[in-house]
Amino acid sequence: MTQIRTVVLCSVLSVGAILIGAVSADEISEHAHQLHFSSIVLDTHDDTTQRLFAKDYDLGARNPEGHVDIPRMREGGMNAIFFSIWIDGKIMGPPAIQKALDQIDAVRENVKKHSNDMVLARTAEDVRRAHAQGKIAALMGVEGGHMIGNDIRMVRIYADLGVRYMTLSHFYNDEWADSSTDKPVHNGLTDFGKEVVREMNRQGMMVDISHVSDKTFYDALEVSKAPLIASHSSCRALCNHVRDMSDEMIKALAAKGGVIQINYERSFIDQAYKDAYERETGGVVAHLSEVAKNCNNDEACISREMASMQKKLIAEGKLPTVSWERIVDHIDHAVKLVGADHVGLGSDFDGADMPTGMEDCSKLPKITQALLNKGYSESEIRKILGENTLRVMEQAERVSKEMQGGQ
Ligand SMILES: [Zn+2]
Image 1 (cartoon, rainbow, N blue to C red):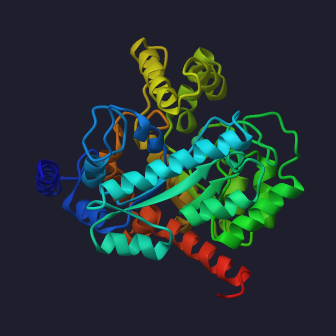
Image 2 (image 1 turned 30 degrees about the horizontal axis):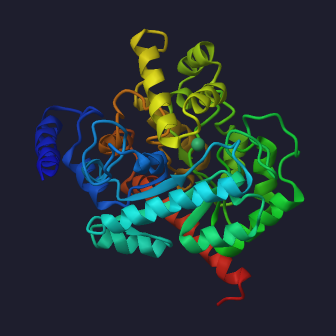
């Protein structure tokens, strides 16, 4: 309740700000507040799942660390979330399946435990219904094709359990798809990889091309009957990182109806930060690999250690500060390139290091304010906040029905 009152109080204060001049993006005007809190705000990528295993984390309470929990989602108006099912890409075969199932179960059990606030959503319609009921829609995405253990039946099983997208690879190549951060061995997608994409289409599971190599992206674009998503990638034109998408790729994605959901990770949105981070740690893959070893592959430990190490480097002045406004620069770049129908939000909360001013999901209304300040229309902002992703979900659902014979 206190948090709701704070937001209301902020809005009242910003009405005053409007009267005396332009609202700064750090304040939320009544207009932005009304627009943001009446919209479906859908974030396509959150690594909160790994925290569900930590003893000191409670999804239903405001936690001193991390970026996402129910109180802060309420405060930030984030009412639909894709919980990421992620394990290190070096784990393959049956152990990868086992760990993925552990995480899927943890999400489902936590949603049940907090059923007053949350409900599991499988379709765009489920998300809209949850919103109408004032509940947070919980969805799941499997981050990395290695988690099917090279067994296509797992695509169907994960889909049945509620998984609505799968990222074709993570930081390393899997058995059938090349990653953007590994040495290519498959020349994109193998024939089996293409079969996996078709099976995902059949199951209505969105095909996510974040993390994959450029060739894998173009292969998936050609094979998939439904539009693709880049669940948590930013723009290479503004920060030259292989995890981001080139303008040419964004245009190709949009031409087939897809959406790029902008990632907030500092080293993906700011060139100076990326360069300094690579100097200090050898880059995200080397850094993650070292931390994973020290943590004995414990996912909760990995996300905690990654965050604290970067905090330390910033405190020591070895890494520059990055403002949250860089997120808006990436949204704006993509919109200028392909229009507001093809851009969304994929924060990477709880799995990435957030820029200053976007410390957690409670800060999301600032994005709505910043887009209003830039002259975006209400309808464009609603699309970016969530409607575009819902459109792709609906298209994936339609393709699935067609492929299964219109049942
Ligand atoms: Zn990722």
